[in-house]
Amino acid sequence: METLFIPATKTTPQVDFNTSTNVFELKGRSIPADAMTFYQPLERWCDYYANNTTQTSIAVEVKLDHLNTGSVRALLSAFTKLLNARERGVKVQINWYHDVEDEDMMDKGEEISLILDHPFKYIAVRSEDY
Amino acid sequence: MAGLFEHEQVLGMMRTGHDEWFYFGEVSEDLINSVVSMVDTKPELQAVSRPARRRLLSALVECLQNMRNNTPAVPNDSIPNSIVFMRKISDYEYGLRCGNIMMTADVAKLEERIKEINSADQDQIKEMYMKQMGVVLGDGNRKSAGLGLLEIARSASGKIDYRFIDMDGGFTFFCVEVNVQLN
Image 1 (cartoon, each protein chain N blue to C red):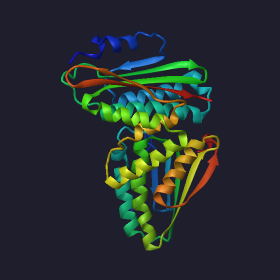
Image 2 (cartoon, rainbow over the protein chains, first blue to last red):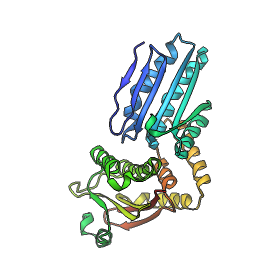
Image 3 (spheres, rainbow over the protein chains, first blue to last red):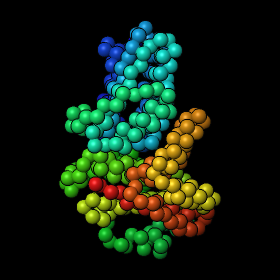
Image 4 (cartoon, chains in turn yellow, brown):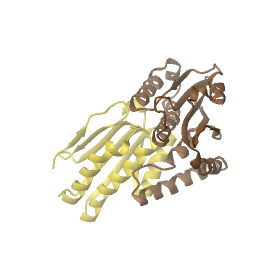
């Protein structure tokens, strides 16, 4: 299966879902006006991956410094698809990075984790480090 | 329907003269990009912490996107039907005011929702957000109905101030005003 790479823009994050390393990374800011359209290719990719991967574990690195409500909604849909891989025995580790001073972004991760019913690992860093 | 610039109450809002930045017109992806650039590059905002800047940007973006998603087609579409103001209240507080035209038939429901949000504390607003997100996901709804206002309330340092100004032809001008703390 091919890697999914979408470069960052001023309002959308870099998407690097790398099938060589099995590290799936979202990095930057996610505040597009039409989040569903931006995240649709990612959701489709996650759906296909979850149903076809032969890997036993994957790591998702979420390094977002800002998400609007549309992005939270779209991200939940994409991650729901990806987490279906658990039914095939795949271990899915989601690492949620947030600025050490930004409790709101950590809260956002906790909310998404709760809705997905899947534990996240929270990693506090200085913003300039990611 | 008369344009916003011809309406005395809307004009009154525009005459306050203390605004850092304002915009009249359609809310487009380009406008949102410009706002993001402004917040990213405005020298005095560089002095505040990144989380605080994110909070200001969050409130501004949600206001703009709410307006973009909820403004109906109006009879004379050459008339700008949205306005946005940003005001510096102090070094550590900004005021945002955003308004758009909406259908008068939807006013009562929206006002009830704002009153419900304004009567809640931050923990209750978080609960409402989670509940609404569950509803949106469960419905398979591709829009984020009602979540924008909750996100604005979470970024704001106080209650959501609002007003409805009756226009003719079944339209109402809806204006929402919030303050955002930067410390």
